Length: 452
Image 1: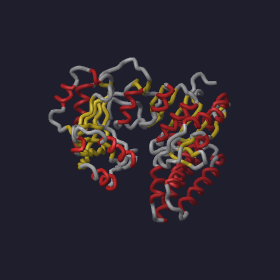
Image 2: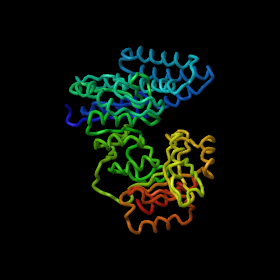
Image 3: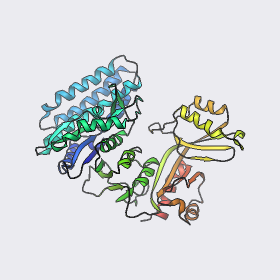
């Protein structure tokens, strides 16, 4: 068995072309402890597959399929031994074409099946890349993630069956680690009955964490196109610094409130098993990345600042709330009925304000449909505001740090703050602000509380 059991995940930009794949192979070859390698679809492929099942035009579908075919066969033809995988990849693309051009009704099940081909194709090609670059006797084996990642039937956003996943890992993976490395797919799974599912956009990180949890890995590595987790987005604050370490709690807050390095659900399996998480760049593996740990050596009050755009604030007003019970239960019953996930909640005697994503690419999406609003209006007045953003200051013991609120609100005295959430978590202080002011607010807060 390896000294440290590791799972390594490589994102879409790391699979973009042969050059990128070879960089990733070098990272894996240099470390024999990496036993499960989870890969995303090649960069842009999932977007193309989404357009494929959304399109109603036959010519457009054929054009998309031709682009997918060209991208993957070009990478295959760059291999030293393209014949080892070319027929298999071509066959899978033919399958995809047949499914996509048939006159099937587009169901969530069909969407999941079509989307699964992105990861299947990239992982098949990368298995051969790694085999060619490996240079030792360790066997490289392609693994269909659906043989391990078992989920429920919630297509396009399936929930994993943790007990079933652990059982499959015990049977299929763990006994074979002595002389095997497995290349597999992120994002996809299957039901107990064998139907392909996906666990949502960005779910490759989550898949990798599920594999790590199932095999009791020591380390989960997330290799991406950024060198580390930063104190804030360097595109907003050029002086933002890479963080050498952050805690699980801090990282969870950062990912939830806008940091794009990690999928928000990624850390849940890692926390459950106390698996150390490393975030590094497959483009610059020599640069130190960020370790995400249960306990960190330093615990600054403000570690980082994140920004989450495309927020909606909806407020419900009702005099029925005044000195009565049951109103909140009724409100959240409606939200649960339509599977609406909210982020921040504040209340007064007769009002409740809640925030949620309006980004169509975000997990929550804009779920406040006319049907939902009308149901809310049946027992309350509803006010909706859009074009807002959430700014989150993330750190430690913010709820118990004296003298913090004054400097924060002093720094933001020239801005309208629509909502404040402070005290519910010891790791963040959040502000809902106008979208147009958000970047300037991040810059001011970073300069004042993190600096150069």
